[in-house]
Length: 384
Image (cartoon, rainbow, N blue to C red; front, side, top):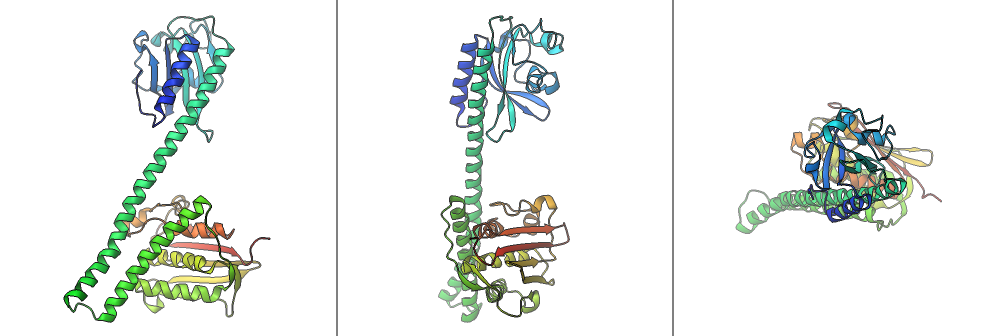
């Protein structure tokens, strides 16, 4: 058996290949992947030396039986390839020495075409029939499910590794700052006044707490265990307090954020601490990615039965394509890498989770070099 890694479920794929080969009574069974205009043999069972082509090299898709089978130009069972006027004259027939063919498309659980499961033999096999076609199709479905599961497992493992790396890096920064200040105080080194030291420690503790809050909220939202504690909240006051907290923690000047709030209260039935967390995350994001001499706008207004919060900055901005990914967990855009901005890539994912929990909507519009505008829409009352 030629072994190419198909993930943790490789034994399932191997058993399916062996069963297809034995049931059809053909020499070779293989799983192929369609990629970049070519067919790649990822795994096979049987004696490949009986065929005249290398199964370790890619084959242009348009030259293959498999592509023709998938799009319907060739049937899934061809008992005598040479005698078949659709594929007998093809160069690959002479080049490969194939006499009989049975194939079926492999589709992943989301319907995406992965490639094919095929069985071939150097001799014509007139006994091949629809029952061979049906079993190969069934096994192709099993393989598609297994490949999809293996890819999901790898995606989860990769996300976990990225998360652990990000957490270890980003927790280290505030912890180091707290450690330096604490050591100075313990050693009696007068780098800061006690009041300044207290503000530094309080700010870094808030950063740590915010990271933990983001991680917990996104995790609970994804698992379905997040619970909202709704109460009547004045969004005007909530937004003002959240802005005050963020600007103080960021050490931003008083005129760095421009507020455009309603003259009076704007009441909503929401989870106040969660929505405050969303406002802080949006403002923290805007302050991180915009020049220190620029202004960030925070606007709150009522639109019929909905509260609309806008946070607009004049920062580096992102492309429309990248904007769609900003709310993905752990996603860090080109601007974060370009500016060296630390973070877990959870801030905007947290805002998205809070919006969805309230049956609201988070949207973003941005262009490179033109800043970004985030809009959070929340129902003033929970849906009946």
